Length: 244
Image (cartoon, rainbow, N blue to C red; front, side, top):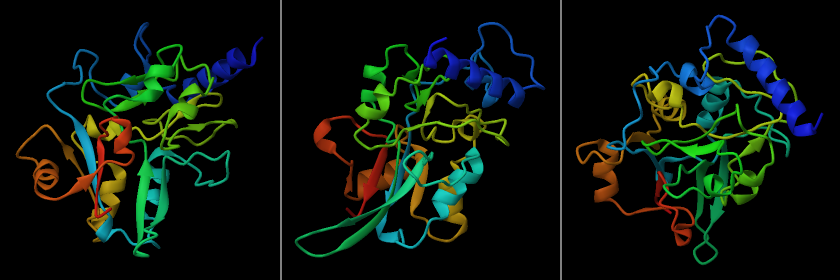
């Protein structure tokens, strides 16, 4: 048995436990079952989900968004090279002015995602509403997408997992990254990181529909100067930053 097949079987075994109370119909992807959206309710291209990070409000010592992400998605918080970090705090310094900036870095949910382009099985895919995901059923763990991501936002699961969140099935031998809390978004909720940031009174992370001219995120993007990290790559990211 190849390593890829072995890893895939281990993943399927893990998810089978996590979803034991669910009747999995043939042809239904696990990710669809996980977020509770009915299979016939396809994501709409009229929406483009995104996030705006105001770095002026992001404290370098604050990791509330990271903690919330770990809790929501059942991550251990391991920050070693083999740990899964769906959000990590990054410190930037302007060498000309000395200004230091702290910001959360996660999957940027690109409109032109290089991770999707290099995936040999189609496991990396982008929904019509702009959320980039991994179909863990067909991910073979080749990690081409990990190498292709310019934001180093993807992780490979090296070890068997326990105590998972049933809404966020994970498994050894596959690649994962920020899902923009798709299981919450499909229920009409905001992301865990944005919710935690707001609850703490920082208001540095705003989630919403970039296509809706009346949404708060759309108004702020059109009013204030915002940037895409590595805009030179032309990926048209769904995560924008203010203050950098």
